[in-house]
Length: 151
Image (cartoon, rainbow, N blue to C red; front, side, top):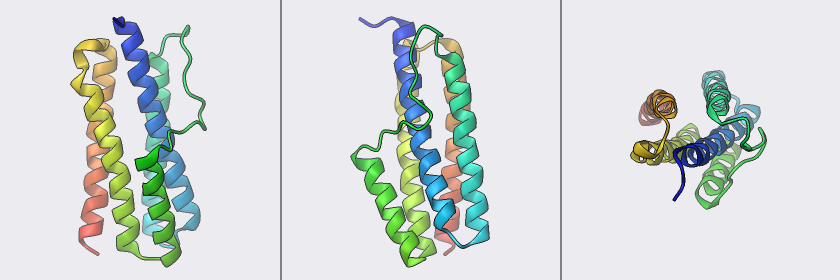
C-alpha cells in the first residue's frame, strides 16, 4: 500500500506531465496561428501551465524525482489531439482549432478530476492546490468552448 507521500508525489507528477503537454501544445499553436486573439489566449494558457507546474513541483518532496520541464505524456489521446490541432492550424479553421484545444482542455480537466477523486490519499496542501488549479482549468475550458460555439 502506498503512503500518502508516495501517492501525492505520483499524482503531482502526473499533473506536471499534463501541464507539460498543455504548455507544449499551446506553444506550438502560438507559433502557427495567425489570429492575434487566439495567439494571446494560447499564450495565457501556456503561462498558466508553467505556473501550475511550478506550484506542483513545490509540493513534491526534495527526495523525490519530478518529470523534466520538457517531458510530456504524449500518450494516445493527447498526441491525437495535438495532431488534430496541427491539421486544423494548417487549414486555418478557427472552429477546428478551438475544438482541438477544447479536447486538450477535456484531457487536462479529466486528469484533475481523477486526482481530486483520490483526495483522501493526498496531502491536504496538494488537495488545496489541485482544486485551485482545477478551477482555473475549468475556466480555460469554458473560455475555449465559448469561443468555439461563437464561430
